[in-house]
Amino acid sequence: MKNADWALVISLGVLWGMSFVFVELLLAYLSPFMIVYLRVAIGAFFLLAYVLMKRPAFECSAENIINLMIMALLNNVIPFLLITIGQQTTTGGLAAILNANTAFVTMVLAAALVPHEALTVNRVAGALIGVVGVTMAIGYQNIFQLYDGNSGKYLILLATISYALAGIWAKLRMQSLSPMIAATGMLVMSTLILTPYAFTFHFDEMVSLNFLVIQYALAFALFCSVIAYFLYFKILERTGAGNLLICTIIIPPSSILLNAILLEQMITMAEMAGLAVITTGLLVLDGRILGKILK
Image 1: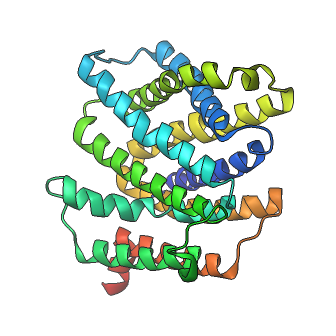
Image 2 (image 1 turned 180 degrees about the horizontal axis):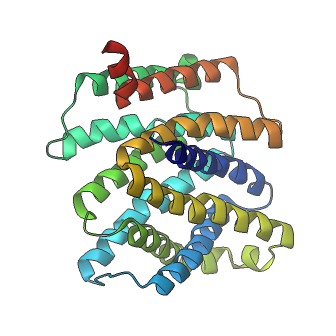
C-alpha cells in the first residue's frame, strides 16, 4: 500500500477503536439500548442525507430489503447491544481485544458455510493462536466461570460471532449492493427495528437528554459510523477488502491507548499478553508478512 492508503487504514482503526471509549463515556449517562439507538439513528440520518444527494442506483426490491434487515440485525443491532451491555462489566480496552476475535470466527464459519472458502494452513494456525490469545486475555482460570462481574466478556465474544455471520451474509447475499448503499441501508434498517422499542420503553430517557450527552452521541455516531464508513469505502476502492484485516489489528491498541489517556483505564499484564498473541494470530491469518519472512 502507498502511504496514503496506510493513513486511511490506520485512521479507520483509530476511529473504530474510539467507539469503545465513547461507549464507556456514555454508559455514565445512558442505558446500553439508548447508546446503540442514538448511534444508529444519527448515523442513518447523515448517511441517508448523503445518499439522497448522490442518488446512486438502488433496486428497492423485497429481496434487497430483507437482506438489509438481516444484515442490520447481524452487523449492528445484535453486536452493538452485546458489546455495549458487556462494557458495563469490563473495560473498553479488553472489549476491543476480544472484538479482534471476529477475524478468527469469520474464517472458521466461512469455511463451513461459504463455498470455496478453504481452511489453509496459515488460517488454521492463525485461528488457533487467536484462541490462545483470547483465553489469556480473559484469564484461563475464569474461562468457564460465569457470574455478574465476568459475563460482559462473553457477551462481547458472542458479538464477534454475530459480526462473523454478518460478514458471511454480506458475501453470500449482498454482493450486488454498493458498500455505500449497504452501509446506509443497514443503519436505516437498524433504526427502524429499534425505534418502536425506543419510543415504548425509553421515551422518558430520550426527552431528558442533556446537551453534553447529545454532544457525545453526535460525536460517537459521526466519528465511529459516518466518517468510519466513508474511510471504509475509500479503502475498499483503493486497496481492496484484504487490507481491512490490518485495521482489525490496529483497533485494540488504539482503544487501549485512548482509554488510558481519556479515561485513565489501564489493562492488566494478562490482557496485554493476550493482545500480543491475538495480534500474532492475525498476522499469521493474513499471511503476507509471514510469507515475506519465509520467502
